[in-house]
Amino acid sequence: MRLRYLFPVLLLAPLGLVGQDPTTAPDPVLERIDELSRLPWLKNDPFTTDVAELNVHGFAPGQVPVYHEDVYRKRLLALDERTPFKLTYNEPVRAYIDMYAQRKQEQTARMLGLAQLYFPVFEQALDRYGLPQELKYLAVVESALYPGARSRAAAVGLWQFIIGTGKLYGLRVDSYVDERCDIYKSTDAACRYLRDLHEVFGDWELALAAYNCGPGNVNKAVRRAGGVLDYWKIYDHLPRETRGYVPAFIAANYIFNYAADHNVYPVIPNYCAYEVDTVHVRYPLELDQLAALIGAPAQEVRDLNPVFKAGVVPNMAWPATVYIPATYVTAFIQQEDSISRSYRPDVSAPAPSTAVARVEQPSTRTVTHTVRGGESLGTIARRHSVSVQDLRRWNHLKGDQIRAGQRLVLHPSAARAEEPAQAAAKPGDGKKEYIYHTIQPGDTLWEIAKNYPGVSVDDIKRLNGHMNTRNLVVGKKIRVGVEKG
Image (cartoon, rainbow, N blue to C red; front, side, top):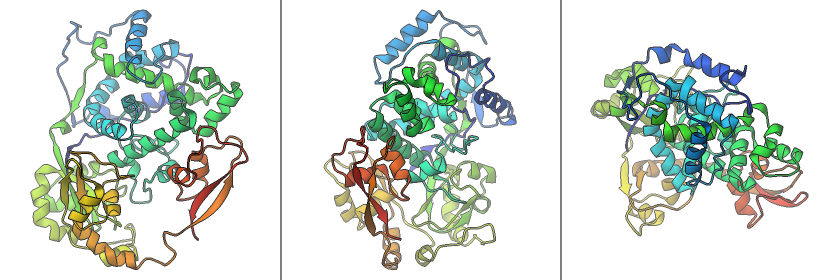
């Protein structure tokens, strides 16, 4: 699989303060944005190049156009007609538009460049789940499109997952691996989370608010506002930071569609011209040692792989994906025997698990299959002598739906190698026992699942048939499948 990788630039935390000017109010979130904008990284960034301003509107260099509020209202109305979101214009929204278009022009220009690489990934995932394409702008508000972003609340990645929610949606987070920084896996998890939140509230603005502060806080705000399901009628009852969340999202929608009208143009990272290949390994390795053996800059290899927190690829239950510049792929192939033997465990390295150590292979053959019309996961799996379960796992598929033209990654030799480890599993592994949870006031499926390790919202839905997930009946019992101890 080949892709173009973009180097991360800056964290833009979720914004706050509805009803006040975010450029002047003493808001701690905006103070953090100012702090980040002064980082040496932004002032001495070797990975980005400013493109010539197009000046399609005849603006002078540095000119900051200002428009009458009727212009903003008309433009948002035009965008509103193409989206299920309510792109309301009001003073809070205007304040955030001014911030993106005036005070934070440099950040906006960089995000416009980043979007050219990350948005296609987001759009494909959103389309796969049948979600509105405008949700891609949520990552702008969350992380400024920086995969390594970390908030003061320890939320991480493009979509700013905290550990609990990330694990709930299948993201691995431990001392060595943080899949919240994986572009594809975190985007898939965000889509599933947003889909579940919308199913709970039936309203996209409330779903966005719940993504920021949790569905429990949104339910409390709804109750305090008299039960009305309207973001603008409950925002006084929301946590302070969440009050500015939807206005910031609306402003991001606006600025990404009308940036040129504000004399803001993309800053294109040099990595746009860098084709990066993926290599798949079944052995532990240190990224610095890998870089030394193939002759690549060590920091560059680390930057391309933020998922591996300590710069170490640990033993994995399936092949680990490592990104390297395409120009070094030949060197990787030539040096793979040395690379596979280069790892020397020490006190800082993860101890290999027994099951994984037994199936470790020096290398794994990777096959890419392009789906043809009429093919299913079953027919593809039989053709390559692998299981449907492996196909789903290798390609992060949650169901059986595939489409013509889609590219699937297969590891036939890895599937055969894993068979002994699967047979060696403990007798009780993977078996479920079923308990009943009594729905409490304010419960949501997301909060119920969070209370039972290894249980997802989808698991609860499958076990309980056609339950009404938006209006859970207090006192009703639902089935929950948990792993036997």
